[in-house]
Image (cartoon, rainbow, N blue to C red):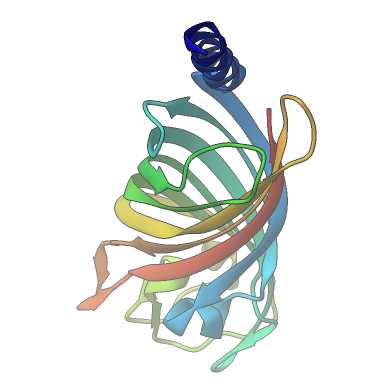
Length: 212
C-alpha cells in the first residue's frame, strides 16, 4: 500500500515537472490585424492595418513581462474641412507591459496587460488641391496662422511622444510549443500642443498572431 502511494506521488510530481518544463521562460510573438483610430484621430484617419512583434518573459504562473513593437498604416481622409488632399499616416510604438493572466497550459488562457509606450507618429502629404489662409490641425502636425504656399504644406511631418496602453487577450495552444492569440489594446498618446490644442490621439489595434 505504501509503495503504491509513493509511486503515485512520484508519478504526479514527474507529470507536474514535465508540464512546468514545457512552458518556456521566454517566448516570441508575431501577428497582424486592424488598427482603429478613435475620437479626434478618427475624424482625420481611416481604419488601417498593423503588424506587431515582441518577446514575452514568463515570470510565474500568472505573471509575465511583454516587450513589443507595432507598426500601423492609415490613410488620411480625402477631405478635411476646406482641405482636399492625398496623405497617409503611420504609427509606430515600442511598449513595455506587465501581463497578468490565468496559468499557461493546454486550455485557453485569458490575460490583461498594460504599461507605458513610446510612440512615433508621421503624416505624409503628397497632394493638396486647395488651401485656406489660416489652418491648424494638431493631428496632421500642421499649424499656419497666415497665407502659405501649397509647396510648404506638401511633405512629411512627425512627432515622438510618450503614452499609455492596456488591453485584453485570449490565447489557445495550437501545438506542442505554439499558441494562437487574439488581443485588443487601447493606446493613448500624449502629444504637444498646436495653437492651444493638444495633439493627443487614441488607437485600438486588434491583433491575431502566434506565440512560440
